[in-house]
Image (cartoon, rainbow, N blue to C red; front, top):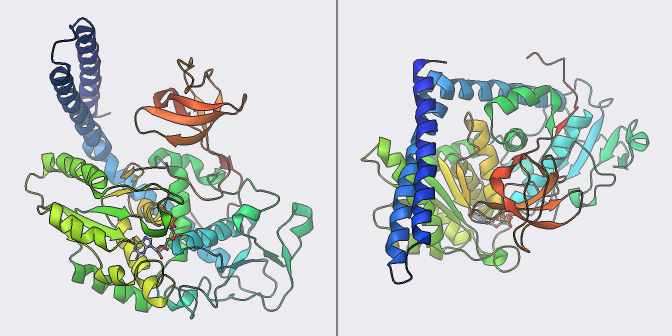
Length: 470
Ligand code: GDP
Protein backbone atom coordinates (compact mmCIF):
# COMPACT_ATOMS: atom_id res chain seq x y z
CA UNK A 1 0.00 0.00 0.00
CA UNK A 2 1.08 3.55 -0.72
CA UNK A 3 1.90 6.13 1.96
CA UNK A 4 -1.40 7.86 1.16
CA UNK A 5 -3.29 4.62 1.77
CA UNK A 6 -1.60 4.03 5.12
CA UNK A 7 -2.10 7.63 6.30
CA UNK A 8 -5.80 7.60 5.34
CA UNK A 9 -6.31 4.23 7.00
CA UNK A 10 -4.75 5.50 10.25
CA UNK A 11 -6.96 8.59 10.17
CA UNK A 12 -10.01 6.35 9.78
CA UNK A 13 -8.98 4.35 12.81
CA UNK A 14 -8.23 7.45 14.86
CA UNK A 15 -11.43 9.34 13.98
CA UNK A 16 -13.73 6.34 14.51
CA UNK A 17 -12.16 5.70 17.94
CA UNK A 18 -12.58 9.39 18.84
CA UNK A 19 -16.17 9.17 17.64
CA UNK A 20 -16.91 6.33 20.04
CA UNK A 21 -15.13 8.04 22.98
CA UNK A 22 -17.18 11.15 22.31
CA UNK A 23 -20.55 9.34 22.12
CA UNK A 24 -19.84 7.28 25.24
CA UNK A 25 -18.77 10.23 27.33
CA UNK A 26 -21.66 12.48 26.22
CA UNK A 27 -24.31 9.82 26.84
CA UNK A 28 -22.83 8.97 30.23
CA UNK A 29 -22.94 12.66 31.13
CA UNK A 30 -26.59 12.76 30.03
CA UNK A 31 -27.47 9.96 32.49
CA UNK A 32 -26.52 12.14 35.45
CA UNK A 33 -28.30 15.31 34.32
CA UNK A 34 -31.37 16.38 36.24
CA UNK A 35 -34.69 16.41 34.44
CA UNK A 36 -34.78 20.21 34.49
CA UNK A 37 -31.63 20.57 32.42
CA UNK A 38 -32.13 21.36 28.77
CA UNK A 39 -32.01 17.88 27.26
CA UNK A 40 -33.02 19.04 23.79
CA UNK A 41 -30.13 21.50 23.61
CA UNK A 42 -27.63 18.89 24.80
CA UNK A 43 -28.90 16.24 22.40
CA UNK A 44 -28.72 18.69 19.52
CA UNK A 45 -25.09 19.42 20.36
CA UNK A 46 -24.33 15.69 20.42
CA UNK A 47 -26.07 15.23 17.08
CA UNK A 48 -24.13 18.16 15.60
CA UNK A 49 -20.74 16.79 16.59
CA UNK A 50 -21.72 13.22 15.65
CA UNK A 51 -22.59 14.50 12.22
CA UNK A 52 -19.17 16.17 12.02
CA UNK A 53 -17.47 12.89 12.94
CA UNK A 54 -19.55 10.97 10.41
CA UNK A 55 -18.75 13.48 7.65
CA UNK A 56 -15.04 13.26 8.39
CA UNK A 57 -15.15 9.48 8.26
CA UNK A 58 -17.06 9.64 5.00
CA UNK A 59 -14.44 11.94 3.51
CA UNK A 60 -11.65 9.52 4.40
CA UNK A 61 -13.63 6.64 2.94
CA UNK A 62 -14.21 8.71 -0.17
CA UNK A 63 -10.47 9.28 -0.57
CA UNK A 64 -9.71 5.59 -0.09
CA UNK A 65 -12.47 4.55 -2.45
CA UNK A 66 -11.74 6.91 -5.28
CA UNK A 67 -8.34 8.55 -5.11
CA UNK A 68 -5.78 6.56 -3.16
CA UNK A 69 -3.70 4.16 -5.28
CA UNK A 70 -5.93 4.81 -8.28
CA UNK A 71 -8.58 2.51 -6.78
CA UNK A 72 -11.47 4.31 -8.43
CA UNK A 73 -9.95 4.13 -11.91
CA UNK A 74 -9.11 0.45 -11.45
CA UNK A 75 -12.67 -0.35 -10.30
CA UNK A 76 -14.17 1.44 -13.29
CA UNK A 77 -11.93 -0.36 -15.75
CA UNK A 78 -12.68 -3.72 -14.20
CA UNK A 79 -16.44 -3.12 -14.26
CA UNK A 80 -16.29 -2.12 -17.94
CA UNK A 81 -14.12 -5.09 -18.88
CA UNK A 82 -16.30 -7.64 -17.14
CA UNK A 83 -19.45 -5.96 -18.44
CA UNK A 84 -18.10 -6.15 -21.97
CA UNK A 85 -17.50 -9.88 -21.52
CA UNK A 86 -21.09 -10.45 -20.37
CA UNK A 87 -22.43 -8.40 -23.29
CA UNK A 88 -20.35 -10.44 -25.76
CA UNK A 89 -21.57 -13.69 -24.22
CA UNK A 90 -25.16 -12.49 -24.59
CA UNK A 91 -24.53 -11.48 -28.20
CA UNK A 92 -23.09 -14.94 -28.85
CA UNK A 93 -26.03 -16.69 -27.18
CA UNK A 94 -28.57 -14.56 -29.01
CA UNK A 95 -27.08 -15.01 -32.48
CA UNK A 96 -26.85 -18.72 -33.23
CA UNK A 97 -25.55 -19.66 -36.70
CA UNK A 98 -28.44 -22.03 -37.22
CA UNK A 99 -31.69 -20.82 -35.70
CA UNK A 100 -33.57 -23.98 -36.65
CA UNK A 101 -31.40 -26.31 -34.57
CA UNK A 102 -30.67 -23.81 -31.79
CA UNK A 103 -32.26 -24.41 -28.42
CA UNK A 104 -34.63 -21.61 -27.66
CA UNK A 105 -36.51 -20.06 -24.79
CA UNK A 106 -39.81 -18.33 -25.39
CA UNK A 107 -40.89 -15.34 -23.35
CA UNK A 108 -44.07 -13.34 -23.76
CA UNK A 109 -43.93 -9.64 -22.99
CA UNK A 110 -47.63 -9.52 -22.20
CA UNK A 111 -47.37 -9.62 -18.41
CA UNK A 112 -50.20 -7.47 -17.05
CA UNK A 113 -48.20 -4.75 -15.34
CA UNK A 114 -46.19 -1.55 -15.87
CA UNK A 115 -43.05 -0.98 -17.96
CA UNK A 116 -40.56 -1.65 -15.17
CA UNK A 117 -42.35 -4.82 -14.19
CA UNK A 118 -42.51 -6.04 -17.80
CA UNK A 119 -38.85 -5.21 -18.39
CA UNK A 120 -37.98 -7.21 -15.28
CA UNK A 121 -40.08 -10.09 -16.60
CA UNK A 122 -38.01 -10.19 -19.79
CA UNK A 123 -34.84 -9.76 -17.70
CA UNK A 124 -35.71 -12.88 -15.71
CA UNK A 125 -36.33 -14.73 -19.00
CA UNK A 126 -32.94 -13.65 -20.40
CA UNK A 127 -31.14 -14.67 -17.20
CA UNK A 128 -32.77 -18.10 -17.43
CA UNK A 129 -31.88 -18.27 -21.13
CA UNK A 130 -28.23 -17.48 -20.37
CA UNK A 131 -28.12 -20.05 -17.57
CA UNK A 132 -29.66 -22.83 -19.69
CA UNK A 133 -27.87 -21.76 -22.88
CA UNK A 134 -30.98 -21.09 -24.90
CA UNK A 135 -31.54 -18.24 -27.34
CA UNK A 136 -34.29 -15.98 -26.03
CA UNK A 137 -37.23 -15.41 -28.35
CA UNK A 138 -39.34 -12.46 -27.25
CA UNK A 139 -43.00 -12.29 -28.23
CA UNK A 140 -43.91 -8.64 -28.09
CA UNK A 141 -46.61 -7.99 -30.65
CA UNK A 142 -49.62 -6.29 -29.09
CA UNK A 143 -47.44 -4.82 -26.34
CA UNK A 144 -49.52 -2.49 -24.20
CA UNK A 145 -46.83 0.20 -24.42
CA UNK A 146 -46.47 0.03 -28.19
CA UNK A 147 -48.57 -1.83 -30.72
CA UNK A 148 -45.46 -2.01 -32.87
CA UNK A 149 -43.72 -4.14 -30.28
CA UNK A 150 -40.32 -4.14 -28.64
CA UNK A 151 -38.39 -3.18 -31.77
CA UNK A 152 -40.27 0.08 -32.07
CA UNK A 153 -37.73 1.42 -29.57
CA UNK A 154 -35.09 -1.23 -28.88
CA UNK A 155 -32.64 -3.24 -30.95
CA UNK A 156 -33.94 -6.72 -31.76
CA UNK A 157 -32.67 -9.33 -29.31
CA UNK A 158 -31.07 -11.17 -32.21
CA UNK A 159 -29.98 -10.63 -35.79
CA UNK A 160 -30.28 -14.30 -36.71
CA UNK A 161 -33.04 -15.84 -34.64
CA UNK A 162 -36.17 -13.96 -33.60
CA UNK A 163 -38.94 -16.55 -33.90
CA UNK A 164 -39.50 -20.13 -32.78
CA UNK A 165 -39.79 -21.00 -36.51
CA UNK A 166 -43.08 -22.71 -35.77
CA UNK A 167 -41.45 -25.33 -33.54
CA UNK A 168 -43.65 -26.59 -30.70
CA UNK A 169 -42.79 -25.38 -27.25
CA UNK A 170 -42.77 -27.17 -23.94
CA UNK A 171 -43.65 -25.29 -20.77
CA UNK A 172 -40.88 -24.93 -18.17
CA UNK A 173 -40.80 -28.00 -15.90
CA UNK A 174 -38.44 -30.48 -14.23
CA UNK A 175 -35.03 -30.69 -15.89
CA UNK A 176 -35.42 -34.11 -17.57
CA UNK A 177 -38.77 -33.08 -19.04
CA UNK A 178 -37.41 -29.99 -20.79
CA UNK A 179 -33.73 -30.66 -21.38
CA UNK A 180 -34.16 -32.01 -24.92
CA UNK A 181 -36.97 -29.67 -25.95
CA UNK A 182 -36.10 -27.29 -28.80
CA UNK A 183 -38.29 -24.55 -27.34
CA UNK A 184 -39.07 -23.99 -23.68
CA UNK A 185 -41.74 -21.48 -22.79
CA UNK A 186 -41.35 -19.44 -19.62
CA UNK A 187 -44.24 -18.57 -17.30
CA UNK A 188 -44.18 -15.41 -15.20
CA UNK A 189 -41.67 -15.82 -12.42
CA UNK A 190 -44.31 -16.17 -9.71
CA UNK A 191 -45.59 -19.37 -11.39
CA UNK A 192 -42.19 -20.93 -12.05
CA UNK A 193 -42.31 -24.61 -11.00
CA UNK A 194 -39.87 -25.98 -10.19
CA UNK A 195 -38.01 -22.92 -8.95
CA UNK A 196 -34.44 -22.51 -10.11
CA UNK A 197 -31.10 -21.66 -8.50
CA UNK A 198 -30.34 -19.44 -11.48
CA UNK A 199 -32.89 -16.86 -10.37
CA UNK A 200 -31.68 -13.60 -8.81
CA UNK A 201 -30.04 -12.77 -6.58
CA UNK A 202 -27.60 -15.49 -7.70
CA UNK A 203 -24.43 -14.60 -9.54
CA UNK A 204 -22.50 -16.94 -11.86
CA UNK A 205 -19.70 -18.77 -10.15
CA UNK A 206 -17.14 -18.21 -12.91
CA UNK A 207 -17.41 -14.41 -12.62
CA UNK A 208 -18.18 -14.14 -8.90
CA UNK A 209 -14.67 -13.54 -7.55
CA UNK A 210 -13.91 -10.75 -10.00
CA UNK A 211 -17.33 -9.21 -9.49
CA UNK A 212 -17.27 -9.32 -5.68
CA UNK A 213 -13.84 -7.69 -5.73
CA UNK A 214 -14.96 -4.48 -7.41
CA UNK A 215 -18.69 -4.26 -6.69
CA UNK A 216 -20.69 -3.87 -3.48
CA UNK A 217 -23.93 -5.35 -4.81
CA UNK A 218 -22.90 -8.05 -7.30
CA UNK A 219 -26.49 -9.17 -8.02
CA UNK A 220 -27.61 -5.67 -9.00
CA UNK A 221 -24.60 -5.32 -11.33
CA UNK A 222 -25.32 -8.74 -12.85
CA UNK A 223 -29.02 -7.98 -13.39
CA UNK A 224 -28.04 -4.57 -14.77
CA UNK A 225 -26.04 -6.26 -17.54
CA UNK A 226 -29.19 -8.07 -18.72
CA UNK A 227 -31.36 -4.95 -18.52
CA UNK A 228 -28.68 -3.09 -20.49
CA UNK A 229 -28.55 -5.74 -23.22
CA UNK A 230 -32.34 -5.77 -23.50
CA UNK A 231 -32.74 -2.00 -23.70
CA UNK A 232 -30.07 -1.20 -26.31
CA UNK A 233 -31.83 1.69 -28.04
CA UNK A 234 -32.45 1.49 -31.77
CA UNK A 235 -31.30 4.37 -33.97
CA UNK A 236 -34.58 6.24 -33.62
CA UNK A 237 -34.62 6.04 -29.82
CA UNK A 238 -30.90 6.77 -29.52
CA UNK A 239 -31.27 10.08 -31.35
CA UNK A 240 -34.38 10.92 -29.37
CA UNK A 241 -32.64 10.24 -26.03
CA UNK A 242 -29.60 12.30 -26.97
CA UNK A 243 -31.66 15.27 -28.20
CA UNK A 244 -33.94 15.16 -25.17
CA UNK A 245 -31.03 14.99 -22.77
CA UNK A 246 -29.47 18.18 -24.07
CA UNK A 247 -32.80 19.96 -24.66
CA UNK A 248 -33.84 19.36 -21.06
CA UNK A 249 -30.51 20.68 -19.76
CA UNK A 250 -29.49 17.44 -18.11
CA UNK A 251 -25.99 17.93 -16.71
CA UNK A 252 -23.90 16.17 -14.07
CA UNK A 253 -23.58 16.48 -11.14
CA UNK A 254 -27.24 15.75 -10.72
CA UNK A 255 -29.31 13.78 -8.23
CA UNK A 256 -32.18 11.68 -9.58
CA UNK A 257 -35.42 11.80 -7.64
CA UNK A 258 -38.23 9.41 -8.49
CA UNK A 259 -41.54 10.10 -6.78
CA UNK A 260 -43.95 7.24 -7.32
CA UNK A 261 -47.50 8.16 -6.48
CA UNK A 262 -50.90 7.61 -8.22
CA UNK A 263 -51.99 3.95 -8.23
CA UNK A 264 -49.05 2.74 -6.10
CA UNK A 265 -49.83 4.76 -2.98
CA UNK A 266 -51.90 2.91 -0.41
CA UNK A 267 -51.86 -0.27 -2.50
CA UNK A 268 -48.19 -1.24 -2.61
CA UNK A 269 -46.35 1.66 -1.01
CA UNK A 270 -46.71 4.52 1.41
CA UNK A 271 -47.00 8.19 0.57
CA UNK A 272 -43.81 10.19 0.98
CA UNK A 273 -43.64 13.98 0.92
CA UNK A 274 -41.28 15.75 -1.47
CA UNK A 275 -39.52 17.12 1.63
CA UNK A 276 -38.43 13.60 2.64
CA UNK A 277 -36.77 13.07 -0.73
CA UNK A 278 -35.16 16.51 -0.67
CA UNK A 279 -33.56 15.95 2.74
CA UNK A 280 -31.37 13.28 1.16
CA UNK A 281 -30.73 15.38 -1.94
CA UNK A 282 -29.51 18.19 0.34
CA UNK A 283 -27.28 15.75 2.21
CA UNK A 284 -25.71 14.52 -1.01
CA UNK A 285 -25.00 18.04 -2.26
CA UNK A 286 -23.69 19.17 1.15
CA UNK A 287 -21.13 16.39 0.97
CA UNK A 288 -20.31 17.11 -2.66
CA UNK A 289 -19.98 20.84 -1.92
CA UNK A 290 -17.08 20.17 0.46
CA UNK A 291 -14.97 19.40 -2.60
CA UNK A 292 -16.81 21.65 -5.08
CA UNK A 293 -18.03 24.69 -3.11
CA UNK A 294 -19.75 26.48 -5.97
CA UNK A 295 -21.74 23.55 -7.29
CA UNK A 296 -25.12 24.34 -8.86
CA UNK A 297 -27.63 22.01 -7.20
CA UNK A 298 -29.50 20.10 -9.87
CA UNK A 299 -32.17 17.41 -9.63
CA UNK A 300 -33.62 15.19 -12.32
CA UNK A 301 -37.21 14.80 -11.21
CA UNK A 302 -39.29 11.89 -12.48
CA UNK A 303 -42.78 11.18 -11.29
CA UNK A 304 -46.14 9.81 -12.35
CA UNK A 305 -47.68 12.73 -10.43
CA UNK A 306 -47.45 15.96 -12.47
CA UNK A 307 -48.02 18.21 -9.44
CA UNK A 308 -44.64 17.28 -7.90
CA UNK A 309 -42.66 19.47 -10.31
CA UNK A 310 -44.49 22.71 -9.51
CA UNK A 311 -44.21 21.99 -5.78
CA UNK A 312 -40.47 21.42 -6.22
CA UNK A 313 -39.74 24.59 -8.18
CA UNK A 314 -41.80 26.64 -5.74
CA UNK A 315 -40.30 25.25 -2.51
CA UNK A 316 -36.66 24.75 -3.56
CA UNK A 317 -35.73 27.87 -5.55
CA UNK A 318 -31.96 27.32 -5.18
CA UNK A 319 -32.27 24.05 -7.11
CA UNK A 320 -32.59 23.56 -10.84
CA UNK A 321 -35.17 20.88 -11.54
CA UNK A 322 -34.74 19.05 -14.81
CA UNK A 323 -37.88 17.19 -15.77
CA UNK A 324 -39.58 15.96 -18.88
CA UNK A 325 -42.80 17.91 -19.29
CA UNK A 326 -44.15 15.48 -21.83
CA UNK A 327 -44.18 12.96 -19.04
CA UNK A 328 -46.36 15.11 -16.86
CA UNK A 329 -48.86 15.37 -19.65
CA UNK A 330 -48.96 11.68 -20.42
CA UNK A 331 -48.41 10.14 -16.99
CA UNK A 332 -51.25 9.07 -14.79
CA UNK A 333 -53.37 6.01 -14.88
CA UNK A 334 -55.53 6.61 -17.93
CA UNK A 335 -52.90 7.24 -20.56
CA UNK A 336 -50.03 5.15 -19.22
CA UNK A 337 -50.11 2.38 -21.70
CA UNK A 338 -49.60 4.05 -25.06
CA UNK A 339 -46.68 4.92 -27.30
CA UNK A 340 -46.50 8.41 -25.79
CA UNK A 341 -46.15 7.11 -22.26
CA UNK A 342 -43.56 4.58 -23.43
CA UNK A 343 -41.29 7.41 -24.51
CA UNK A 344 -41.74 9.13 -21.14
CA UNK A 345 -40.89 6.13 -19.03
CA UNK A 346 -37.88 5.15 -21.17
CA UNK A 347 -36.52 8.69 -21.01
CA UNK A 348 -37.06 8.84 -17.25
CA UNK A 349 -35.37 5.51 -16.46
CA UNK A 350 -32.53 6.38 -18.85
CA UNK A 351 -31.84 9.79 -17.31
CA UNK A 352 -32.26 8.51 -13.74
CA UNK A 353 -29.60 5.90 -14.52
CA UNK A 354 -27.23 8.68 -15.64
CA UNK A 355 -27.54 10.53 -12.32
CA UNK A 356 -24.83 10.62 -9.64
CA UNK A 357 -27.20 9.53 -6.90
CA UNK A 358 -30.79 8.27 -6.64
CA UNK A 359 -33.41 9.16 -4.06
CA UNK A 360 -36.53 7.06 -4.50
CA UNK A 361 -38.57 4.15 -3.20
CA UNK A 362 -37.17 0.75 -4.14
CA UNK A 363 -40.71 -0.61 -3.89
CA UNK A 364 -41.03 0.86 -7.41
CA UNK A 365 -39.66 -1.14 -10.32
CA UNK A 366 -38.99 2.14 -12.13
CA UNK A 367 -36.29 3.14 -9.67
CA UNK A 368 -34.90 -0.37 -9.42
CA UNK A 369 -34.45 -0.47 -13.21
CA UNK A 370 -32.60 2.86 -13.08
CA UNK A 371 -30.40 1.61 -10.22
CA UNK A 372 -29.56 -1.60 -12.10
CA UNK A 373 -28.51 0.21 -15.27
CA UNK A 374 -26.56 2.73 -13.17
CA UNK A 375 -24.40 -0.12 -11.84
CA UNK A 376 -23.14 -1.00 -15.32
CA UNK A 377 -21.98 2.57 -15.98
CA UNK A 378 -19.55 2.92 -13.06
CA UNK A 379 -17.01 0.99 -11.04
CA UNK A 380 -19.18 0.54 -7.97
CA UNK A 381 -22.34 2.62 -7.68
CA UNK A 382 -23.93 0.21 -5.22
CA UNK A 383 -24.16 2.88 -2.51
CA UNK A 384 -25.35 5.68 -4.76
CA UNK A 385 -28.93 5.59 -3.57
CA UNK A 386 -31.28 6.38 -0.75
CA UNK A 387 -34.45 4.34 -0.75
CA UNK A 388 -37.26 5.66 1.42
CA UNK A 389 -38.67 2.18 1.84
CA UNK A 390 -37.38 -1.24 0.68
CA UNK A 391 -33.87 -2.52 0.25
CA UNK A 392 -32.95 -3.54 -3.30
CA UNK A 393 -34.65 -6.70 -4.55
CA UNK A 394 -35.67 -8.41 -7.76
CA UNK A 395 -39.35 -9.34 -7.97
CA UNK A 396 -39.72 -13.13 -7.70
CA UNK A 397 -36.15 -13.59 -6.46
CA UNK A 398 -35.04 -16.55 -4.36
CA UNK A 399 -34.72 -15.85 -0.64
CA UNK A 400 -32.12 -13.19 0.15
CA UNK A 401 -30.08 -14.23 3.16
CA UNK A 402 -27.65 -12.54 5.50
CA UNK A 403 -25.22 -14.35 7.76
CA UNK A 404 -24.72 -13.33 11.40
CA UNK A 405 -21.10 -12.48 12.15
CA UNK A 406 -21.89 -11.67 15.78
CA UNK A 407 -24.51 -13.16 18.11
CA UNK A 408 -27.50 -11.10 19.18
CA UNK A 409 -29.59 -11.39 22.32
CA UNK A 410 -33.14 -10.03 21.89
CA UNK A 411 -33.83 -7.18 24.30
CA UNK A 412 -37.55 -6.82 23.64
CA UNK A 413 -40.43 -8.43 21.77
CA UNK A 414 -39.52 -6.71 18.50
CA UNK A 415 -36.05 -8.28 18.35
CA UNK A 416 -34.88 -11.85 17.66
CA UNK A 417 -32.01 -13.76 19.22
CA UNK A 418 -29.40 -15.09 16.85
CA UNK A 419 -26.12 -17.00 17.05
CA UNK A 420 -22.99 -16.24 15.11
CA UNK A 421 -23.20 -18.07 11.77
CA UNK A 422 -27.01 -18.15 11.73
CA UNK A 423 -28.75 -17.33 8.48
CA UNK A 424 -31.44 -14.68 8.32
CA UNK A 425 -33.88 -14.20 5.44
CA UNK A 426 -33.60 -10.46 5.08
CA UNK A 427 -36.90 -8.59 4.88
CA UNK A 428 -35.77 -4.99 5.08
CA UNK A 429 -33.68 -2.28 6.61
CA UNK A 430 -35.36 0.11 8.99
CA UNK A 431 -32.68 2.68 8.14
CA UNK A 432 -32.11 3.34 11.83
CA UNK A 433 -29.35 0.84 12.52
CA UNK A 434 -31.74 -2.12 12.62
CA UNK A 435 -32.66 -4.67 9.98
CA UNK A 436 -35.63 -6.98 9.89
CA UNK A 437 -35.34 -10.63 9.06
CA UNK A 438 -36.57 -14.16 9.55
CA UNK A 439 -34.33 -16.56 11.42
CA UNK A 440 -34.02 -19.50 9.01
CA UNK A 441 -33.61 -22.08 11.80
CA UNK A 442 -36.47 -20.98 14.07
CA UNK A 443 -38.63 -19.21 11.45
CA UNK A 444 -39.03 -16.30 13.90
CA UNK A 445 -39.16 -12.76 12.48
CA UNK A 446 -37.84 -9.65 14.12
CA UNK A 447 -35.21 -6.93 14.35
CA UNK A 448 -31.46 -7.12 14.94
CA UNK A 449 -28.64 -4.57 14.69
CA UNK A 450 -27.54 -4.33 11.05
CA UNK A 451 -23.81 -4.36 11.85
CA UNK A 452 -24.03 -7.87 13.25
CA UNK A 453 -24.68 -9.52 9.87
CA UNK A 454 -23.24 -9.59 6.35
CA UNK A 455 -24.81 -10.24 2.98
CA UNK A 456 -24.57 -13.85 1.82
CA UNK A 457 -23.84 -13.88 -1.89
CA UNK A 458 -25.26 -16.86 -3.79
CA UNK A 459 -22.81 -18.25 -6.33
CA UNK A 460 -24.28 -20.65 -8.85
CA UNK A 461 -22.61 -22.72 -11.54
CA UNK A 462 -23.71 -21.42 -14.92
CA UNK A 463 -22.36 -22.03 -18.43
CA UNK A 464 -18.98 -20.35 -18.92
CA UNK A 465 -19.22 -19.68 -22.65
CA UNK A 466 -15.67 -20.75 -23.54
CA UNK A 467 -16.40 -19.86 -27.21
CA UNK A 468 -16.34 -16.19 -26.20
CA UNK A 469 -12.78 -14.99 -25.52
CA UNK A 470 -12.18 -13.26 -22.19
P1 GDP B 1 -44.01 0.21 -10.22
O1 GDP B 1 -45.49 0.00 -10.30
O2 GDP B 1 -43.66 1.58 -9.74
O3 GDP B 1 -43.31 -0.86 -9.44
O4 GDP B 1 -43.39 0.16 -11.66
P2 GDP B 1 -43.97 -0.31 -13.07
O5 GDP B 1 -43.00 0.15 -14.09
O6 GDP B 1 -44.27 -1.76 -13.06
O7 GDP B 1 -45.34 0.45 -13.28
C1 GDP B 1 -45.44 1.83 -13.11
C2 GDP B 1 -45.73 2.55 -14.42
O8 GDP B 1 -46.24 3.87 -14.11
C3 GDP B 1 -44.49 2.81 -15.24
O9 GDP B 1 -44.11 1.76 -16.02
C4 GDP B 1 -44.90 4.06 -16.02
O10 GDP B 1 -45.75 3.70 -17.07
C5 GDP B 1 -45.66 4.83 -14.95
N1 GDP B 1 -44.71 5.64 -14.18
C6 GDP B 1 -44.37 5.50 -12.87
N2 GDP B 1 -43.44 6.41 -12.50
C7 GDP B 1 -43.15 7.11 -13.61
C8 GDP B 1 -42.25 8.20 -13.89
O11 GDP B 1 -41.51 8.68 -13.04
N3 GDP B 1 -42.23 8.65 -15.16
C9 GDP B 1 -43.03 8.13 -16.14
N4 GDP B 1 -42.91 8.62 -17.37
N5 GDP B 1 -43.88 7.13 -15.91
C10 GDP B 1 -43.95 6.63 -14.67
